[in-house]
Amino acid sequence: MKATVNGIETYYELHGKDGAPWLTLSHSLACSTRMWDPQIEALKSRYRILAYDTRGHGESMAPAGAYTLEQLADDLHALLRHLAIDSTHFVGLSMGGMIAQALAIARPERVLTLTSIMSTTGDLDVGAPTADAMQMLLRPPATTVSSSMASIGSRLPPNEKPLRAR
Image 1 (cartoon, one colour):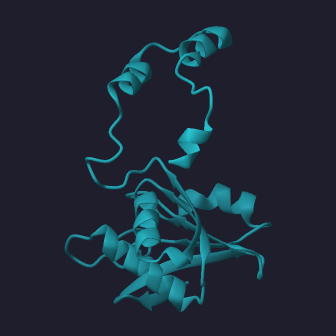
Image 2 (cartoon, one colour):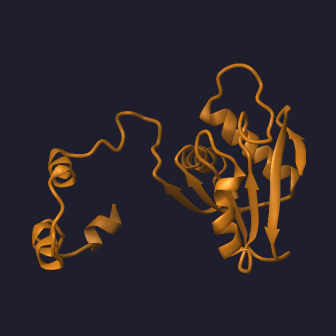
């Protein structure tokens, strides 16, 4: 289906049961709704699913010019309004996760939960790994469970409550 929202024609699909909680899926750069087909199949019995093609992708319009995250979030917000979706669980992959974060900042009432997969905030100063984390990520992998646990054991906090309180 297509809807003209925020000045462009946006392609979207609806799946799942009427009345079920809404789940919105936003794809990564250079992809389309098709990347979500396995997840739609697995989740449509529990959720009412909105999968859509972002501006410049798949079957949605591709107006000339650069796009901003805020513009892509505005496109999504306009589509949610068009479909009368007051709030939704949100899963975004890479660019889709960035769109979800921008929507959550601008319109927090629309986002029930947010799962941002392999994504970033877009701010180069946020989320840079520490030197310890880089050292851990770049070393050869452990070959046994016990050596793996031994390598991370000293880095696990004895009490996670202070971390959750942040």
